[in-house]
Amino acid sequence: MTRTTVEMPLRSLVEHLRIRVAACARRYVLGIAGPPGAGKSTLSKSIRDELNLRAGCVIAEIAPMDGFHLPNAVLRATGDLERKGEPHTFDVDGYLETLRRLRDTPIGETVPWPTFDRAIEEPTPAGVVFGGHEIAITEGNYLLLDERESSPWSRVRALLDEVWYLDVDRDVIEHRLIRRHIRGGRSVDAARIKVHDSDLPNAGLIAGTRDRADLVLRQREGRYYAAQA
Image (cartoon, rainbow, N blue to C red; front, side, top):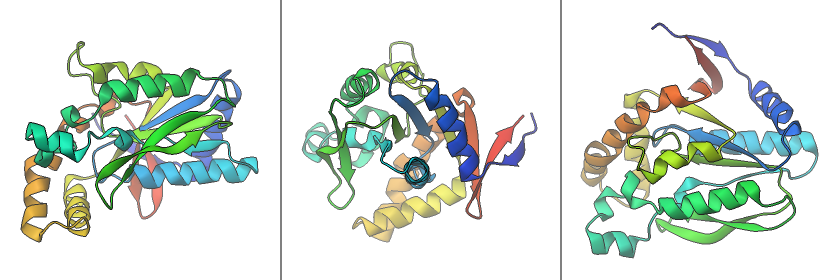
């Protein structure tokens, strides 16, 4: 199937959200999915900042899936430290529980959410606290994963009002992730091994979830484009 792309300016994406949020009686939860290195965090921050700017107050915040990485000590004990980032290296049950609480707790009541500190590669408990926020943007790799009905990841989608998938070419992912791992303290060789042995296979798994998204976006020269069949 041939896909064409239509430019989706940030203002159009934000206006779409504002319309959807106005019709929602509780906190609206947007998911932004995609492979590692796709630019999910950048898109999430841009959407959040534009929503808040238009509202003239803070109505949106980010709830990163990365806050539910298992601690390094746990991964080291199970021999999974080098596989960090794969589906089984997250506290998916904790993510589901907190996501459900974030979605269903009345706006105005507080819900703490863990974030992830890339400087030390560890989660930070209650790194962000939701309160009066009308919109939560949760971004992560596995929001659309549905390998098996018994997989806890398959329960994430039902907790999201809509999901956007940020698509990116494999060579771009590889380049970005090698740079990320080098900045994180790995040698060039170690960074390449991590990317080829773990990150790229993960990206392939995630790519198989793309068609489950409500909207597929690609970034080109700082602009976003929606894929259409």
